[in-house]
Length: 228
Ligand code: SAH
Image 1 (tube, protein in one colour):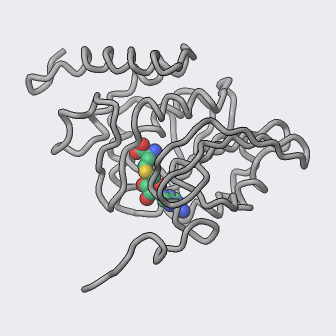
Image 2: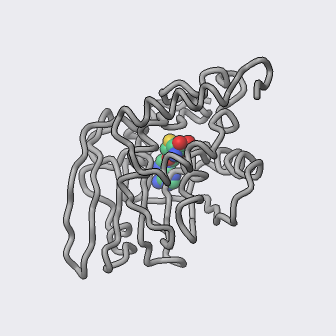
């Protein structure tokens, strides 16, 4: 049904077609995307672009990720529905909403309080089960609910994968999905843990904003100058 003269539903169906064309075939993932109105997660100034397959600004120099990449990453998590999941980089909360439909427990961490609060408000508009919101440095993980069956990082990690995330991953086939590389571009990497054995597989290049924190990039390595 058109809202403000825009037929978001038709645009969403067209976007789903593009996502399918990019190889996302997992019916549960596609349905979770269909159930999640992206325009609710995009600032009003950019709302008319909400169903174009692009990252968009959300404030604090951060972005809501490209929908096809959100879909691909969600598919790579291979969620069965009964997992305990940790998301690092709440941002707009869009990926959070999709994950919440596909697991049993979800914790999401964001370093910018303002974004976490906006994401909380965005997510309240949807009828979703509870989500734990944490404001802080996600490179340290979140020990209270560890071990996690899945950890998804939606910001670009440096070549040395944050050790706390490996430590907090379940040894029973836990999967950690994260972009790894330089500040400019990364390789999507999935790490699987069986016992103490760690296996890693890559899935092509991607571009994310940097993961900033104790076990990530240092703020001054990414933010440049500050003046008052
Ligand atoms: N999934 C989000 C992507 C947001 S961009 C979306 O689609 O809206 C990545 C987010 O990671 C940004 O909001 C950024 O502030 C956050 N981030 C970067 N480093 C972080 C850290 N160490 N801990 C928590 N969040 C972090």
